[in-house]
Length: 209
Image (cartoon, rainbow, N blue to C red; front, side):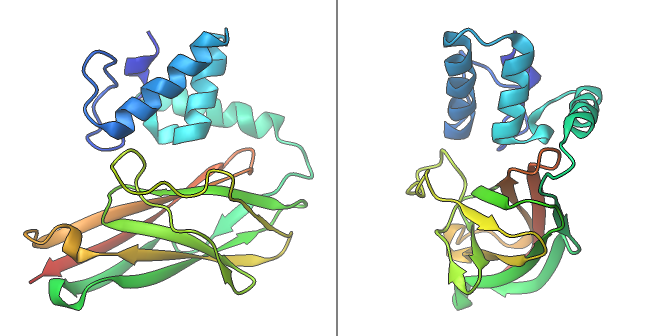
């Protein structure tokens, strides 16, 4: 069975079709079911699900490494290539009273064709992110399947070879008004890089009243 090969982005537990733990798990299960319904093979379903939700959702580390090696071997020479320098930002103390704060990460296309960003996601509803390219900011994306308004599924941005873009991250402490202490949140950027199709950024902070 394919479901338990993948883990829920919320709790990290294997997917359970009979008892899905949250909306995000339901979304992953529905995606797998859709691939099954069109007659995709097991390997095709695993690869498609990993592409859609990230390699780290695969529970088996050896399997993750095997898929990445296969993607690297098959990547065209003129493919786009996402490059990042900083993947973690420490925001220090974040006060509930001050409301939403922002931070930015930089990514670059070091490949030979357009790097197409078509989705961003976050690990919690308190965190959202958008792409800023050539002075224009795209829609905000948050954690899928948790009640937030879904962003335009047809949105995408093409970053030319050699160009840079910013990932703007929003953290809203009022989503968890009773929470204090250390917090870690992750933002995922999905692209057409044939190998690193999901790039992760992390913010850490200490929430105070």
